[in-house]
Amino acid sequence: MDVKKMNTTALAYIGDAVYEVYVRKYVLEQNSVDVNKQNKLAVKFVRAEGQALAVKKMMESLPDHELSLVKRARNRKITSKPQHADPVTYKLATAFEALIGYLYLSEDRQRLEEVISQAMELIDKAEINQVRKKL
Image (cartoon, rainbow, N blue to C red):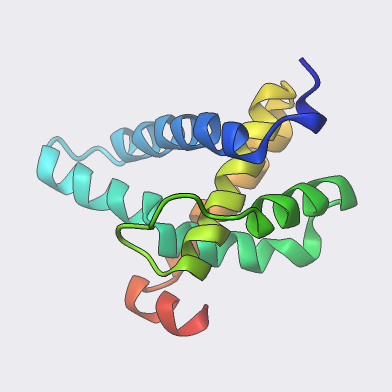
């Protein structure tokens, strides 16, 4: 499978699942046994606004091949109506998920974990209500 030529929607599909697993692992490591608290914390990281903010801030430091992929995914035509985000935010979040999917399928675990860690740090620092204003 040539990951570099894959459809960005397919990359985002797998990237969404991979990112969700990393987020859930992080949430479990926070020592909270309250499932409601775990879910609230997880939602903070998986919301489109947070992912969009993270990828937007990371774009200037991405290597060329990753930046090219992110732009390709961001510019892809939306075929379904976003339910919980505006189209720009949705496209950026999809681009983030495509990057995660690309890194996962490329089997570059070190880079995958670097990107996820950086994204989660950026999201954690941002207040989600402020995220909308920054996009």
